[in-house]
Image (cartoon, rainbow, N blue to C red; front, side, top):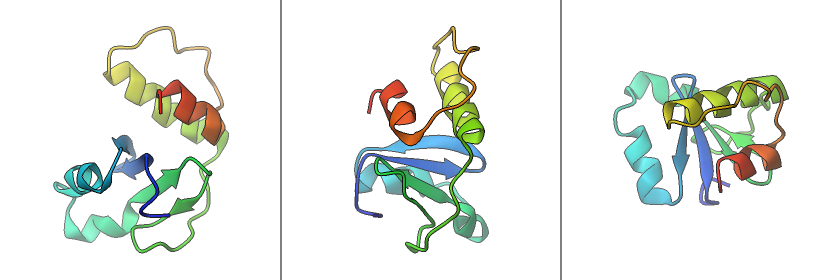
Length: 97
C-alpha cells in the first residue's frame, strides 16, 4: 500500500499528492519527526494507513470532501461550494489522478 501511487497524504490536516516515492518523501521532508505518526496515506483503492503500513480508520466522506476542496481552492480552482461529500474514487477523479 505504501508503494501504491498516486497517494493522498494527510499532513497537518492538509492534503498533499504524491505520484511516486520521491514526491512522497518531498511531502514529508518538512514534517517534524514527532508528527510523522500522525501522517495518513490514502490510495486509490480507498485504503487508509499510517507511514508504517498500519491500517487507519477512514475519514468520513465529509472530511475527505473538505480536504480535497481546500486543496483545490489553494490551487486556484473555484465553484467547489456544492461539494459536500466525496468517496475515494470521486476524490481522486476530482484531483485528476
